[in-house]
Image (cartoon, one colour):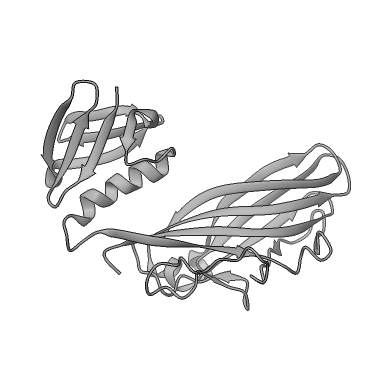
Length: 247
């Protein structure tokens, strides 16, 4: 059994591929959430859908987060004058690959900023959302949300190579957001232990939302800590932005 969910001006069309039935539901009565790995689409107190992601054929997302946030955008944004748009950029670093692991991290020391000069051959900024000039500022090594607005969503894939000098080296990489008393962080790589010495490529995908002006106006930085001295090369990060409303 599967479902196809299509966004209409004031309604959601739900097609049940098993029963071959089509129903239209007013958006004003609907809510969507995730519970125990399942997508829950409700009409008041009644569940229309309460199933695994694999049972949702449309929107075509494999991940629970992407699917739920997309359906949520249908409900919030409504009809022809409100929609969801977006784009992406890939920022590929050059400096830290010459030589490998140019960023040194002292075991037990202070957090170290992960840099990205965007000069690598795989940098791609031709698909940014309309009216967005950049999502990363290489001059400050900060993410730049200044062209976004509160309510926008950002997905980030971090791709690094950690060069460990000893076995059982543990690292943490956090995305630091906001500033001052309202600063906070999002774990990207947490308590990851490398059992052997050598070069280890590791990627991590996580998401944030621009929930307030503190997040919007203060960018963000990746910082790494380690319990043993190591070094880091930056392959880069892919950044996808979903924006509320037509831009």
